[in-house]
Length: 297
Image 1 (tube, rainbow, N blue to C red):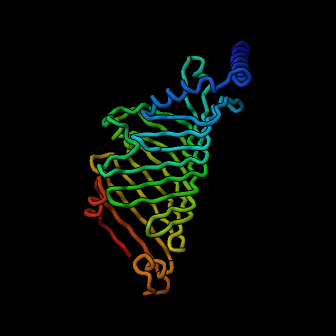
Image 2 (cartoon, rainbow, N blue to C red):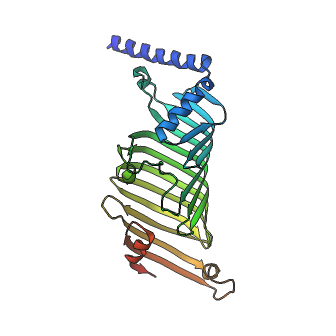
């Protein structure tokens, strides 16, 4: 037992010395082109780091990247003021790099659906391509922004002041179109505001779990028309046709705030209770509308 403890202690001490040597003597900026090329090849997109690169230790080995940009299909898909990658130490002894955690500060993500129905996150000419397996302990986004634009329908939204903490994020090797069927995670999401062209939601908070193509969002809390509402959402995409269920209750909201969307003139005032319990299915918004069933009160 003593010999085993001595061996383990010696191995840990060696890892500490190696990490200290990396911090003190290695200039990470020398490897910038290789890091950019490796990241670009992994994602199948153009990845660049405009700022400083650094290596740190305690706790664990950390790689810090500043001013990160990801481009795909001629547009900027995502950027972050700073990205921190937590690298597991033991796999390094076997010359393997395994990312244990990713933290993004002030990320900006822009997702767009073009007139051809394709999303800007899709790899060019790689429809049906295989995605590599992913196993991350933690994914954190701090003070982020998400923009979504649908050029087909003319809709979209902007979510600001968003924080995401996802744990046990795993993706088994799968085709790109089947990514949701092979993704599992546990996450908490909060956004200060979500703006559309018609109205603004505020104070969004939700917990989410996903496994085997079934995703549960509950509770979903947010303020709509000046009142606090709550509900839950389930999406089942495991089968050939996705199924959805939405339940939401918004109590005692000022009805005049709702009618402002329809007409600038004041047509009603007072308080209203609203509840919805709907089920729907389909791969497009039109199909979901056609199959919608349930109760709205």
